[in-house]
Length: 269
Image 1 (cartoon, rainbow, N blue to C red):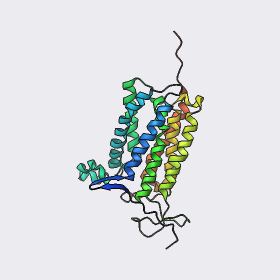
Image 2 (cartoon, rainbow, N blue to C red; image 1 turned 135 degrees about the vertical axis):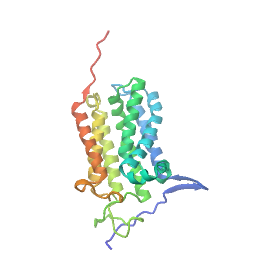
Image 3 (cartoon, helix red, strand yellow; image 1 turned 60 degrees about the horizontal axis):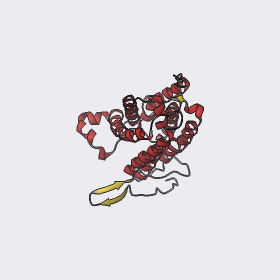
Image 4 (cartoon, rainbow, N blue to C red; image 1 turned 180 degrees about the vertical axis):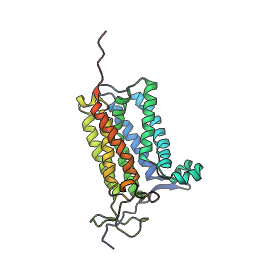
C-alpha cells in the first residue's frame, strides 16, 4: 500500500438525541442558505438595483424548494434512472441522500423566472446577484461531502492522498476538497470581484454567465480527479456524467457574458 494521510474520521452526525440527529450535511445546506441570503440582501441594492431586501427575504423559500426538488429530480433522472423507474416511490426518500447540483441549478433557475415575473423584476439582474453568492453553499456542501467520506477521488500516489473508509484500501485524491476550493472559494472571489465593479454589474447577465461558465470549468477539472459514480462509470468519450452536464453550462455562460449589455435607460418624463 502506498503512503497516505489518515482520513480525519469526523462523525457525520454532529448531535444526536434519541432518534433526532443533526448532520453536518444538513448544516451545510442551512449555512449556505443563511450566509448567501444575508450577503445577497446587501448586493441587490447596489446600483442598478435588482430588488428590495424584502423581496430577497421572500425568495429564500422559492430557492430552497428549487434546490431540494430540482436537486432530487436531477439525481433521479441523471444518476439512478433505472432504479427509480422500478421503485418510483423511493424518489421521495430524501433521507437516503442523492442530490444533483445540475438538477438543483435548474430548479433555482425556474424559481428565479417564476418569482421575477410575479414581482416584476429583471430576471437577469436578479440572477446576477443570486449567482454571486451560490459558491458559498457549494463550498459548505463539498466540505460536508468530505466529512461524510463520500464522492471520493480516484486512486493516486500524490503525497496528500487519503484512504477513505468506504472506498477500499487504495489511497485516493481528496477530490471533495479540490472541488470546495475551485467551485467554492475561487469562484466566490471571482464573482465578488465582478459584481462589485459598477460597469460589469450593470451588464445584465454577465455575473450569471461568469458563474455558469466558471462552475462548469471547475466541475470539468474536478471530475478529472473524482471517482465516477459506480452505477454509471465513464460515459461517452471517457467523460463522466458531471462533465457532460457541465459542458452546456460553460456554453450558456459564455453566451450570456458575450451578449450582456447594460439595460437601456428610460428617458425622464
